[in-house]
Length: 120
Image (cartoon, rainbow, N blue to C red; front, top):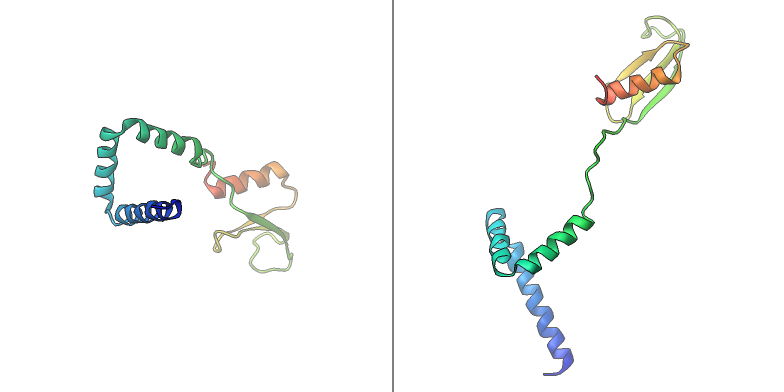
């Protein structure tokens, strides 16, 4: 067998294994992994270590929603107190918050954090 034929044979065998593994349902796949761990524990440990080292870690903290603040028309009938600002959220189309003139940046951050569910 030539080196090219050997490569082709190995590639075809790898593709066949991949197809068979992809065809397993989740229960069979879990059983397969546990049986592999019993047969070749060092190889399974090496692969699990690779997954642990390279897997993306979930974010521990919640993210603020992307809120935007617009100046409000003082003549607008939808504003209870006249002028000020309106906070909108791009993720929550029904959300809008009236903000009075004179509120500082910490107040606006607190409103955005409350809307995002980060603080109660």
